[in-house]
Image 1 (cartoon, rainbow, N blue to C red):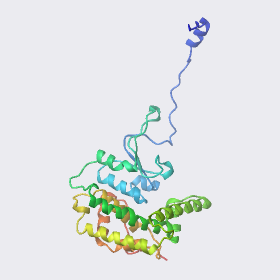
Image 2 (cartoon, rainbow, N blue to C red; image 1 turned 90 degrees about the vertical axis):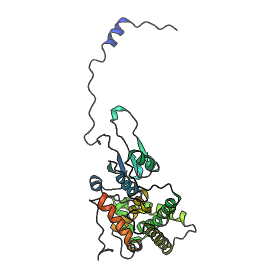
Image 3 (cartoon, one colour; image 1 turned 45 degrees about the horizontal axis):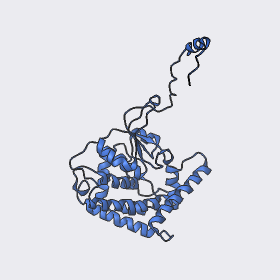
Amino acid sequence: MASLPIPQFLKTLFDSFPLLTYPANSLPSRCPTFDAVPSLYVFTTSEDAVSGNPSFNPGCLKWQAYMKFNQIEFKTVPSNNHASPTGALPFVISQRRSMSESMELAVVPSNKLAAWIEKHGYSFEGMVGMDSARAEAFLALVNSQLRDAWLYSLYLEPNNSQDLASVLYCGSSVSAVSSFLLRQTKAAARQQLLQAHPGGVLDPRKIYADAGAALQAISTILGNHMWFFGGSNPGLFDASVFAYTHLILTLRWHSEENALLRAVMGHDNLLGHEERIRCEFFREAKTPNLNHWVWEA
């Protein structure tokens, strides 16, 4: 079908547009800056994010420490699970670009962080990986027995739940909102524990006893070495253990609900391991006050 010719007066009118093209408006000053430094999104406060202090979540702190071990320059950004592309923290945005460039951000979820860190980080000689069956077996102790005790101690012990979990994860200026969020968080923790302990009943004595046995095994494998499995530099398993021991030692547990703290305190080599990592990689981090294990009256 042949196209109809455009009348001359319409062509003259259309040729005159646009009359004036204005430059694009700049972004509001409150928008984040865009640069090439990777950003690690974790559970943390705004103040601790600026100083690079440890996250108060062990799953986030593990990767925060491992990135430091590998000398990766990054920024820490406060976030929550709802902001994550996968619904869970942590995640990394490895390169942030201007919105005007209309390019996708390079988002690295937690299940791909190990490969991303190994690709972009500095590989030290003597850094032990997690590809051996022995390392995987001990990592299972951290991810099961130790994690279960952490969940129970923080979320299901009534005083710790109210004084610690509520403040860390459910902060809101509206008390009703905080109470609702805390109930949701406790229910999620209970559900995870019930999956690992079928039967419908959670026995705290068994949970803490299993964690104590796991800590004993972890302490034994560390022995007198500086780092796990005889590595000359800290590796992923060191980060995994530190993520729990540091938080267990620095949170202010209630005096009647500090079984997990007492279990860690029983292993001098684990205390030394936590101190070495904290002093070398988190110099601004809170120092555990080992003379005051409990809430002061």
